[in-house]
Length: 329
Image 1 (tube, rainbow, N blue to C red):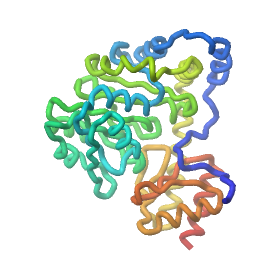
Image 2 (spheres, rainbow, N blue to C red):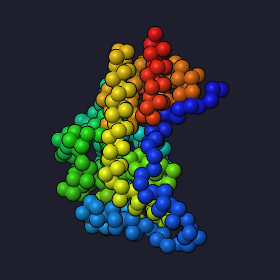
Image 3 (cartoon, helix red, strand yellow):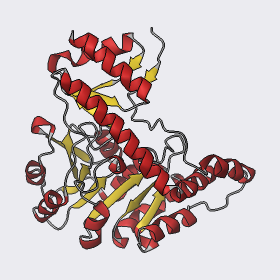
């Protein structure tokens, strides 16, 4: 088995920790034996302040994955949850964990079919999950498209927008979930510090929803706690917002550089708003993944539909382009 030189299957942010984060972590270690702010009320208040929100509408949690699970457990019941396919591959597992039924709606051309998603809603549907930008395709949904989608839904259905990758997208093209949630109480938004802020190993995220929607999520917080160290790191990362956005822009520039190189080979690589690219190679998907793996680069085939290539360091990205050229030749 070749040694892994470049891990590009996990959508990690390969930038250095943000300024102040390491120091905050080191300082917090002195208190890891104490309970302190068990429910992360201080972090919740700071997130709410930065977004000019009532703290009752914000839930800080142990990463967006945990918050997705908590939300579904609180709101899906034994009903149905509709989502696009391909999208975040753990959605069906999270839905089943909540004892609900996942309903996957195919995406022709890997574009989330909002009309088909709305048509899949029934009286038993409790939640629709939207990933924006979509993982793994990178598709970006704009505000007009999402407002029209909301208009097509019945009033009993909640829409949870997963914005894990929003900081890597063009904000002018991307719908702002928080703005939608401000005018429609059916809309909830989950965001994470894992990708943009580089805190993947610490698991911090937050949910924004109407107070009546957020409240049923709170009873599970003692079991999905944000650790003291993670709270300290997240608070420090929030203070480095300008640097975070600069680094996300650098990642996006590298992503687009790799896309341009792959398109020069004649490959079908759609534009992406995430920190990854989606390669549609048809019957060659697996052989491309195997070719890279044999040369120490790990990327991921998802559902047989395509290959997701995370954006890494410039050296890693150069390796992808070199190996892709070999494979094409």
